[in-house]
Image (cartoon, rainbow, N blue to C red; front, side):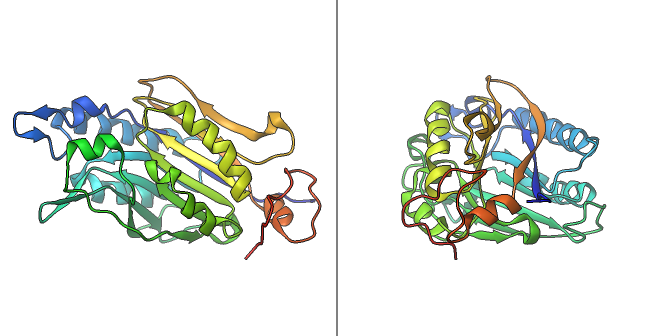
Length: 281
């Protein structure tokens, strides 16, 4: 193809250490992030937005790990989103309501998007986690609230995007829904089992035939951007290994070339062959 459309993803890999953020007390685990963790992560978030807006090319979407946004910082995040000109997908601290707790993410969209010019306002919505980790079940037994809805974000020229929070990445039904309907999957995570996620990334990229992005907590590291390219050296677009590391990065995900090869009767050229039974909707 003569012209390739890319989706530019900006990573802000914050470091939120679980044992410090939600320590176990005599009354049980702390319900919301400790003040020390809040102060640290807010500084990292501010620095992350400064870093990304100083790149020569600005990101179209900024991703921030699961459980990274203190609940009192949501309004400030929306202002940072408006200033950046990028859509932001970010994991919130645990949200409590009537004795029940949910793990949610916030999606902020600047008014001027997809232009990366500064906006004066944003629109926003939330999506939640369906399946919780064993650690979350241990922390808040019988109190976890699941959301069964699955979302596909229509990003126009940047393609369609499926989203998930951490352990929902193991939900096979989700990938049946997304197969043939998305160009990208974005997962925000606070996940210790990084190698399992890496191998699953390649498998899901092939099965759903889409780009896969994981923004993991800097406590464990291993944020990833992966594309189902034909050549092995082209597939891992980004992988940031190492624990305890705050980092920012912008990567480009192919859109128009992938969309072209997702179509029926198109023979593979730049990407792997479509998976069996693949139908583009």
